[in-house]
Image (cartoon, rainbow, N blue to C red; front, side, top):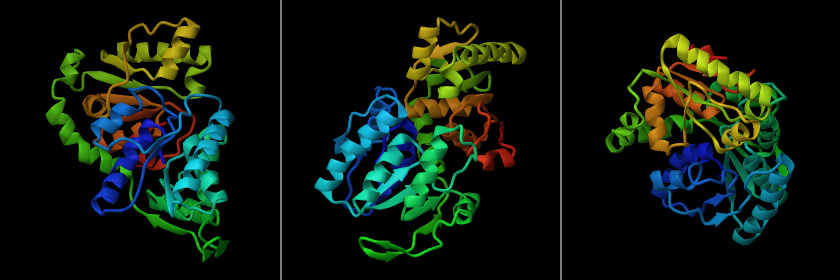
Amino acid sequence: MLGTRPEIIKLSPVIRELEARGADYFVVHSNQHYSYELDQVFFEELALGKPAYSLGAKSSSHAKQTAKIMSEIEGVFLKEEPDVVFVQGDTNTVLAAALAAYKLGVFIAHVEAGLRSFDRRMPEEANRVMTDHISDYLFAPTGKAKQNLESEGVGKHELITWRGPFTPKIFVTGNTSVDATKQNLELARETRSNYLSSLGLKPKEYLLVTAHREENVDREEVFREFLQAFKEIGEGTKKKVVYPIHPRARKQLKEFGLKAEGVKLIDPPGYLEFLLLEEGAHCILTDSGGVQEEACTLGVPCVVLRKSSDRPESIDAGAAEL
């Protein structure tokens, strides 16, 4: 079960492994991300095939989107009767699918379990905490994530399920984002070698920005301050500033009548192109947890544009600054 760009990327190694093992599986796409650039292009580049089901959730309020996905996925589960549903991360898609599965007695496998920011201002925090506490198989990316789960009592008690007594199981697996990055970076270099030059960019001569979170782009004064900061940082470092702008951010930019002076705005690239943008950046400024992980994997310095992070490992390792 997936619905966003990061979920497609991070579940791609899992899907490939299921395919290699001849497992009986199918993919459901909630369409939480709904543009070609944030959706279908990733299936094409990662050779994942077409999802068996697309739910048409699209953008909406958190409540409406979650309810839409729950309502639609319930019918799929009733028809297909899966043994287990894999969800990844902390989006509305994850929580909706997990709740629907839980109520139908379908086991839940949560990839990227145990991440915590301990910041209730983050909408994602509620999604991941609730999903973890109703999941049956929890795949924690790090030992710290496992400790978070254990401190909350996850996996401590035997539970009564529709299939009999069962104790949730926690596994430390590493991060599938690292797998996806390593599996696809060489392909990106081989097939997209002219991408940076087509944008007029040279390696390590630009700063890469990604910002799309509600708290950063949905309030005019905050978004304006970010754009001004990006301009000043570019001038101060004498580096170009490149901003692949998310549809949400572009919409807000237009509605607020803001100008991104000194910032090169580009449409969201495909996954392979974006890997090259990340690899070639002097520094990455982002409010994306997935980009924070990819920057760490690629060895590119990263500044996290949020008040807190659910990926403290990269900060503790000195790979990112909050």
